[in-house]
Image 1 (cartoon, rainbow, N blue to C red):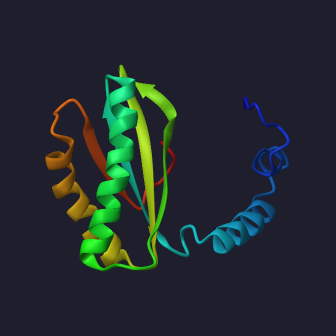
Image 2: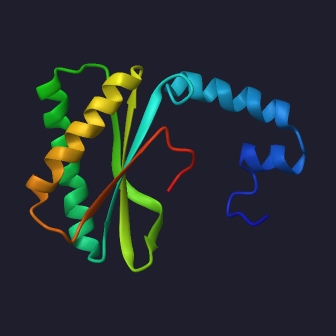
Image 3: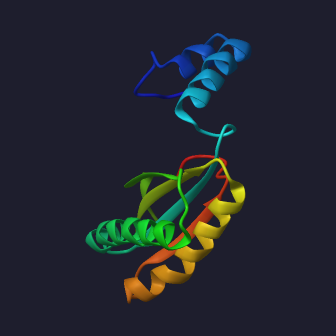
Length: 140
């Protein structure tokens, strides 16, 4: 196991084979922060071979999401980011994430669909790809 943060609590629990303590700490953190399983999550991933284009469109994506939230009259949704993906470049494509949190899976799904439909029109380019992952399993 390699890490730049060997003191992180998750690593310390792995080294000690202490699943129960890790779970207790992690689930408390998730409840306080309102992360899954306490709210539903969606990850909107943008990819482009041009790093500046990817970054600019990540900001545009956030504006589109906000517009769709207003249009749908949804309240209580949280937007995280945009931010570069954990693995910033894969197969020559630069990646940016935008996270969405909601207590309602129905509203989150509706927002994801509305954003998927509205974004290409606003982006006006095929050089940026949008991928949506509802209830993402891991970080990107």
